[in-house]
Amino acid sequence: MHILISNDDGYSAPGIAALAQEMRRFGRVTIVAPEHNQSGSSNALTLNKPLTVTNAGPDVFVVSGTPSDCVHLAMTGLLDDRPDLVVSGVNCGANMGDDTMYSGTVAAAIEGYIFGVDSFAFSQIDKGWAELASAAAMAGRIVERFLSRREKQPAEPMLLNVNMPNLPLHAMQGIRTTRLGRRHNAERMINETNPRGMPIYWLGAAGKPRDAAEGTDFWATQHGFVSVTPLQIDLTSHRQMQRAAELVEDKTGFAEK
Image (cartoon, rainbow, N blue to C red):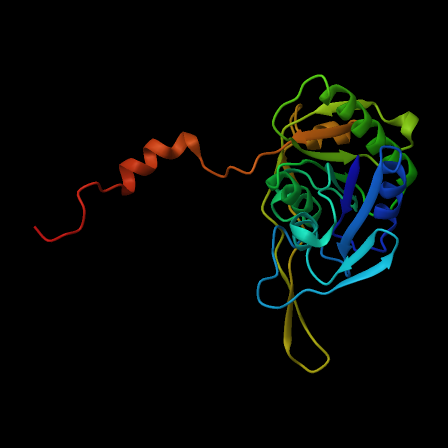
């Protein structure tokens, strides 16, 4: 098996090194990761300038772009053979609820899924890399269980978003399949003045959980469980199709009568 690993914290981050070491249990690992931290880059592709790729070691490629760039290049000719699995992370901080819309970690997994490959995004819920070895080991357990059962149940590719408490492996309460929770709106922006007297602005902190009911990723991780959320990329609001048609649809055409 050929496993592609990427992230959004950058190729030198501790999380990707720990994840790569764990994934080598399952086959050959190739790392294609951003040169610099790309947190919050979402699914951005670099279209207005060329990308550079540097070989930083055996099967380690450093890309001057986003996580989506990394996986896209890997899937469209950078590598000699197509990966069988895409794994992203381990991210320094949670990617739950609304966070998934902005996450570069999740975006790397989405890109693999778009290309028809099973893809995982792994994150620790707290920043700082505490208990990283346990997080990597848990990622290995999840991938091992998935692959062993996948052989018996072939189906369309899956996109799984995994969030892990920063706990020792023995202290984690188990693995729960969850839905995404929801956050309150982000806190107010922060405005400051730079040393040259010009105004500068920082985005405010993420909002606190608003929907953290049992069954959500927020609830699971708060109670010591590993959260696994299957994601999809169809953004269509199917329940609002009829309402949208009532509000805006016109089947008569615009030619003058």
